[in-house]
Amino acid sequence: MPTDTTESGYFYGHPLAPVTQVASLTFRIFKRGIDLATSLLFLPIILGVCLIALVLNPFLNRGKLFFSQKRVGKDNKIFSIYKLRTMQNQGSGNKFATEENARITPLGKFMRDIHIDELPQMINVLLGDMSLIGPRPEQPEFFEEYAQSIPGFSTRQSVRPGISGLAQLRWGYTDSDVGARKKLRWDIEYIKRQGFKIETKIYLGTIAYIFPRIGSRLLRLVISARNS
Image (spheres, rainbow, N blue to C red):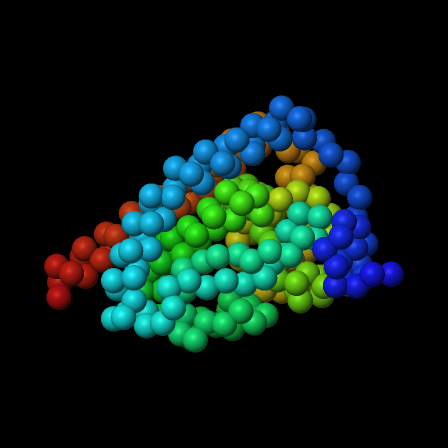
């Protein structure tokens, strides 16, 4: 049995759970088209955000601008995910985010609050490693752990991982086996129901979640600046 392979069928010796492809060809073409169009439209925004971060980094987030980490994608393909660095000495090791909170920089905290540290993942979408909508990709070490302890966990690998998704909106971030099981339920629900209706709901849900956070964070900054 092969191990540590990206060939379809196995990953670290664990079989890829078979899932019937229920999404229509029309939807799959439409979804990829939206991914490409959106990621291309976001390129100027990503460039602008990166330039601002580059200017602020020496004062509020000293170190490298970008952070990359290995993740497991569709059909067990290993790829590098890209983010704006938000922590001091941020490496690529297998750590849960809750273990790293103490090292988050002031600028990093702001970027995480409004999720702009995730913007470089549009490059992953453009390259086809990810989609805008789909299950959140796991680090290889955690994938192996969950594949051993959670039946059907590798079912998630039948679709491209996403920046946002049904499980992310329903459950948020989790760093536990129990949380991973809960999110798996929503990931499988998404895979089974793939189509225009649920995709639109997730897009709208993501917008409804992100924009109020951006407005709230900017308002706090304005109030803080006026009071200082």
